[in-house]
Amino acid sequence: MTEELRVSVDRRGANGAIMYTKGYINNVGGEEIATRAYELMDDGVRTLLLNLRETKIVNSIGISILIEIIEKMIDKGGRIAFCCLTPVIHKTFQIMGLANYAAIFTDDDAAVKELAL
Amino acid sequence: MTASPELQMELTLPMVPDIEIAAARAAGNLARELGMASESIDEMAHAMIEACINAREHSGSKDNRIYVKITGTSLGEGNSRIDIWITDHGKGFNVTEARSRRQSLGAVHKRGWGLQIIEAHMDEVSITTSADGTTIHMVKYGKNDD
Image (cartoon, rainbow over the protein chains, first blue to last red):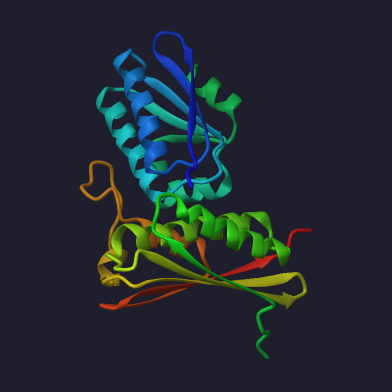
């Protein structure tokens, strides 16, 4: 049984990007997001929005990988934000402290406007 | 008076990647049969996922199996209760130590958050653990969807 995560990226200018996820963010999904995020950082992206509209399930291992991505982006002077979370994923992010280090927006329009993407 | 469970399901699952999804879907289907609200089902699913991952990743189980029992009970007036037992035949763990972990950026321990997530998403949680294995009993109460 596998629950493959799909990731797509929309570059926004030289320094920005929106990453869309679809599926389960577990260890494998988290690593897929990390690989794409680090590629974007190496390419100059310093503002990254993760749109989780089509992700309904996460686990603590996947979130721990997201936290590592946030740490690396902060080290580079950038920022990561999330949008379109289910209420339960939002609550899980808060439990694990992720919400303390990354902005969370209810919808993508508000996120894009606030982050100037 | 205690209502007796109307629905019951027992599963024996192999410890393979993503098997937690099968357990969560089974519980979700049973809860939907009772009419439980979708957000409550979603919380229960995330708790089950963490419980199964803990069993798979940390139990050191000799038989490589996760034993799942789920019961569902209507409580009347649009309320329902789901009981879930997740059992492994592993080596047990220190509950106090597991509960004491806290997250911070740059922390050494980014992993090991399963128990906190389970307790936050469920209404009642009890753990029986010894050198012969662990059972986590979780309860979710829910209002039914309108």
